[in-house]
Length: 459
Ligand code: GDP
Image (spheres, rainbow, N blue to C red):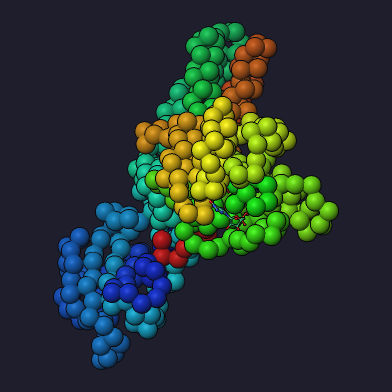
């Protein structure tokens, strides 16, 4: 199908991070990979060695020794790209890696484009497109959960679900198309009731995957958590306590947090993106007025709101009013009674009728552990996070699933309206096309370029 895209040249790149390190790995892939390294390697004759072996020796530029290295041989098709791959482990000096790269280029290698190793792996059938994309996610993963999701996708969990859907649809498409061959005779091979049932099952599966995207987004980008409350309630102090560093501007002049400040904290593997906001109050100050408008904007985007109030200056009635004034768009929220350290037991007792209320003292970092537990509880209550569930994290996949869903709706409408088999078949084929794009059964050069140029060089 896409074999015309395959390059027959040999590519080379530094596969470890740039900069100084104990070692660095330069990777080559292509028909001449072994010969090219062998041309500058002094040690055993690499061309005569068996695959999956390591060889110690030196790399020389003419007679000058550039480095002592260990060379790993992976002969195709038993390699990452399914081509001959050589990995040269050298000392991690940018000077050495530059010199080695220069030598390999002189030997006729070409510098790899971003993601080209993984692109070749995909084109040579090592894995499908969704799995190839998971390689980038895996490298970018920075928490237990993002790692788990990327690993599952790379190992084919998500692709498998899509493949099962596709196989079932292909079966029906061929049954419906068979009817076309016998259109004169007016026969029906594909049982319409069974087809309708299948489509319903597919729609349910696709709905689940589409819904999981919200969670996927949360995993990748963090739970947008807005910290709101009146000026001086202690929002900046709370953000600082959460971040354990002095980032937000803390002051006792009301209204100094004029802009929206964001930062991220990882709590038990879940990333929270805390957004401190300007104090909510009617204001004549233009700069601050912009800040208040932004708060309202942020509240719309929040997945979770922390409403902070000063327990020493707020009455339960006022709190009730303030929460109502927020007009929260069905977002879960926690009420946080701050400055507990200054409050009398009677003052705290006043708030006993409120649900989802915690007392804390941001200034002294008291109650932070309970707050973190409450945050986690909110996320778990709202999103079924389990390692078993397939979670869509990739926007491209999400859009592909959405398009599939629309095509399936049209199949259902077609069935409802007793549409002829040729129209039905066309709608089913369209659904198949979009599913195929996700896993890469159907690709275009543009699509591949779009995906792989986002990778870094050497991947
Ligand atoms: P913001 O306007 O809501 O961002 O409030 P700030 O974080 O700037 O805090 C306003 C004032 O309250 C500052 O003087 C803080 O030091 C003080 N403050 C914040 N949290 C506490 C607390 O838990 N206890 C006490 N006693 N003071 C606090």
